[in-house]
Length: 164
Image (cartoon, rainbow, N blue to C red; front, top):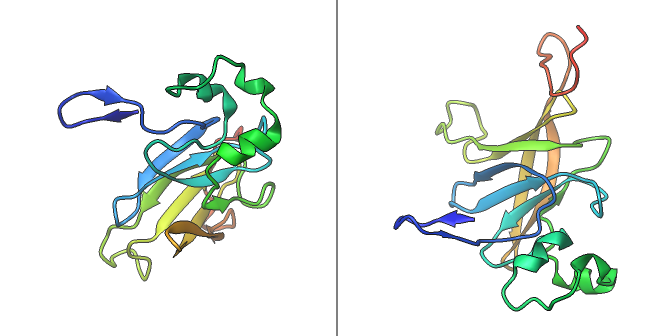
């Protein structure tokens, strides 16, 4: 949903399964993390644009002009033709199970050589990921790399049950 400066609420994009985080890059582009599960084999980072569908079929019933059909009965090929491809797929079991908030380093260099770069945490892994986006023909794609990991003395906690 989008809340306009005039106070109107309007649909913006659809198709997210379980988005845990959203944020903007230095150009003001919206990004959303979405959890693996159901039809998602791994968690993803999407560059979100107005009117686009990001894959979870249950939200199709809210699209104007969508036929009176149960979207869960649509063939996979049909759904795949409608989906917007993710910018980054987080390697499951290695990088993310439940990616969280997207954070932009907007410190102007006070955080080191990472000005205007994006970072993402995870609920299941005690680490922080650095996002390496690249725009190709108007599409954002890229990779993620570990930035901080659970290693002493810099270990930090995550959303899993704390045992220490």
